[in-house]
Image (cartoon, helix red, strand yellow):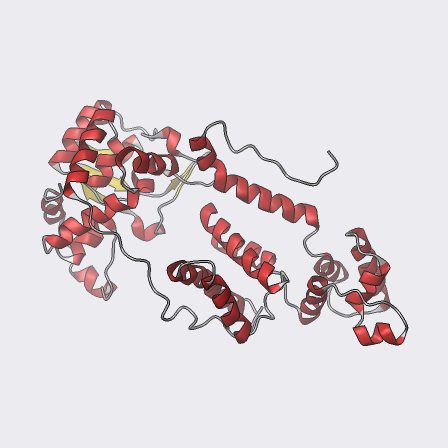
Length: 395
């Protein structure tokens, strides 16, 4: 075909395409990084061992720039200033991105792509987090005109905020700036930048408007539909307030019908990595109320005798994203007209309306309220029987 275009088939159906989209975006992004030779200047600095610019280094760097398609005039315009070239009667063809790379390499700074790689090795975040990092920093790099972001000053940071506000809602801009702000905090610790030019730029940006509480009639209709299609995940979420990824990653061994409890834990096998959104702090065990017990016994009768580590919902796991629940969450919205997270919010709203202590909310859902003290929570942790009694209030 004579083209460098990258083509990927997302899936045979729309649902399959939605499931595979995040994985494919990550694959294509990494493939383009490999294909375009991300940083010819930085690569040469690494090969030659540092920013000492001698004659052999310049020869090697010229060869590197030729290998990525630059002609002699363009290479000269990267290595020398406009005045230097014009004094010799040579043409000046500005290459701003490569000039920024050279300047950054001389100062010891690296590209945002290397920032991401370093954080990935240290923090091992979820694949969806990696995707948001890459997307948000790439947008910033495209606007700035360089993959080397350490040179952004306070004025440019404010200008980028204005740029985002022309395209997105304030709440979305606040989220995007939060990611960038966190990267600059990391970059300070990593010795890449001296100050956080993004500090304070999220202030006064409007939060997203919270959804109204679910209409009781809508919940009633959803329960009837869930009973009809035997959707155990719906009732697990409705009667525990857990996240979709929590219940879709359950194994038979996580449900104890004799002790009437469900445990949400992290675990790993050769093929599957089970992660909770909040990490270790989300590990917990919650009581099974009588309403949920009846549903489990009807939909999953063999759970009483099956104590294996077999997944209850094996088709829910996406190995590329190391994530459970995406398929179920999409179907939840289509099937019931309710977002998955709204069911969790419904549980929290119910308990709040009954003046249940925030300590119980935390024990059941790991939801925290502003001002809750970890020290005090340790002293006021409710008993198992008290939590079980509260679970019976859920409807």
